[in-house]
Image 1 (cartoon, rainbow, N blue to C red):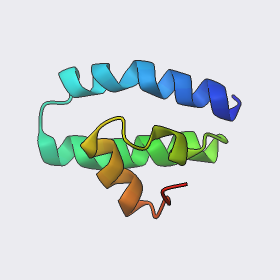
Image 2 (cartoon, rainbow, N blue to C red; image 1 turned 120 degrees about the horizontal axis):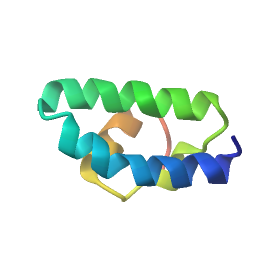
Image 3 (cartoon, rainbow, N blue to C red; image 1 turned 180 degrees about the horizontal axis):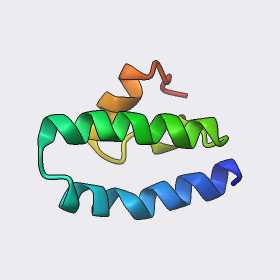
Length: 67
């Protein structure tokens, strides 16, 4: 998966994560782990900045810069 494909896939998955993972604390950890996995597969986390505050917080925890 290339970085563009990963970004597109993550953007499509995010609404599903929001609607199916109801617990805020669990969703925060799940999101952080999911982002780490995608970044391990060559997605650039900077491309997901400013999509949603929860994503920004998870990227902060992963020390992903603003770009």
